[in-house]
Length: 471
Image: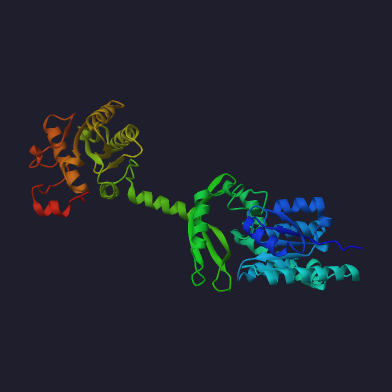
């Protein structure tokens, strides 16, 4: 009776590797190829009884080698089909995991024809003897049926882990790059409102419900950029907890293999909620940078932001306007300081509504405001519109303003030079009778200041100290 030629299934998503293995084994065996884990499982479903041995690559996209092993175990195919894993060079972590999941043997890249033929022949012979003796390999029996003692200890450790994870109220996770799986604790999944405790960062189908794609990609980049000597990272970002955004700090440690050279083998970490602290810091920052009465920026904050914009975008043109309420003293004298405060808040709100989101508005004195805005060729129209938007009445008190405007394209100065020139233009507006605006020009360089004593623009030392960087 003629002996049946054994059939070998080669499962690898790289066609070249399948071709090399088929050339090595094709003279002695029937070859069946699968270009993915999913196709391999389909072929096993159709013709599993005709497959005598499988060569299975660990790292495949979508369904990888480990997932194929899991399915083979569930279907009982591992009892009938020996599996030889194809692993990367010096990747003992892959080898150990494959054996734990039920693999029979492994072959490391680069492929050696003599070794592959010998390994395949030995596994087929061992499998044939097992069938003849009707026995199960002792290591496979241990893998599939750990002792009661081991199971109790494992369950105890897992119970402790879940308990402490829930007490800490921290989102703890573990990432496995081979299967591209991010596993979180059950408490964490429930806290985030997820119906699964394992997700895929690359597919992001569930993960992106709670964290932005950019943050996921940045964290992955940081982890892969670590070294065995410095494996830890820290990253602040926001997550969505059942629809509510909360800020926190991600602390993680990359895992590296012990082989040479070491390879990235995943990560463990946790997300610590710092939302209340984040909000407190934001409140303190706002208090430090904003006027307490009107909510506009204060003088120190606006000066810093103006200088930052001038330095960062020297090619752009800006206008700085200083705005003064006409006859504001009468509001305080006639109606009281509380009424005067309400007038200031009223004008501040009108100013806020009349500018763009990219413009800066500040209160820089008692009844003085500042506006900083980018312009192209419509600066006069912009100023005209804002000037008229600020006029009107607050209850029975008439409101009008005087404005002085300085343009950044007419000098190389920073905030101080712009502010002083706008202040001189404001003096000219008041000299003309108030309720108007003036743009600074060189005829005003020796005028007095409305808001503060002014050094002369013609002073070379002053201009050098406040000079705006040239393009």
